[in-house]
Length: 320
Image (cartoon, rainbow, N blue to C red; front, side, top):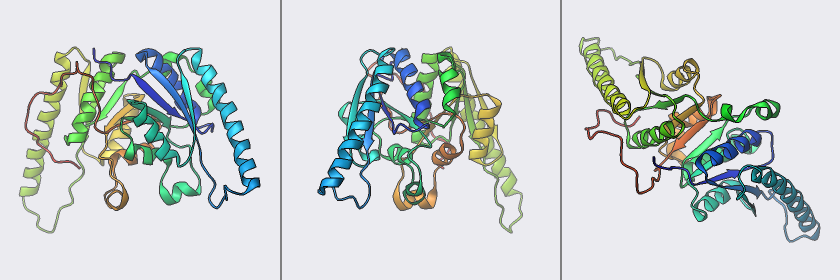
């Protein structure tokens, strides 16, 4: 079996939203026998004159407090992951997170999806979103839950038991398919493929070509889903698919609720800037609305023993 996780990076801002991600990271590190690095980035306040004596004293005190909190977390992690390490940096959180991931060759970043917020979130997007755009590896974002609920959870409740995989047949979607298959194999859990066909908006030309074309496209999509599911069944995985006639994000979240999924795996183009603003992204919309952990995959790296699970076939759909 291919080991897809060897080093996990867990950024933390010590907020309640970072608690679930910490618990998840420790449990996943145990399962994969992976290295674990905790990172805190001390973000400089806008307008702060770091050359001023008072400002420097303030920064030193902030670093001292952050180091103490980080050392406490690392001590907790080492009770279950003995080799856990820590990094304390100053700068822009998203840039530091991605840089550490590159330097340490991390193959998974785990972080809270709704921490690092405030007015800056409205203007520039969350740190989690920026990390997903720039990260050199997959990113698992964990939605906020009450700390008491997380603390009371048994470790087995944190590990995935049902995985949902949205599929739209683009290259990044099929990368996520490969990654989700390895996750399902490693945890020995069922995998549900989901494809949503957005409702068509007809023009004033009410001819029969529209419904006929719609049926043809639907048949092609269903055959592709059936083929992908059959490949997984041949490999001993429990797999099924859902073909829905509704908006994509709604379909993904609805299927996840019905299947009682505890992990959604999605491909992302990593768009940013004006393209991101104009086109939006299904992955980011799901990330914002999902009550379930979302694993976004962009150009995953597999070890040498990995063999593609996909049958060679021509694409029947373009990226959405």
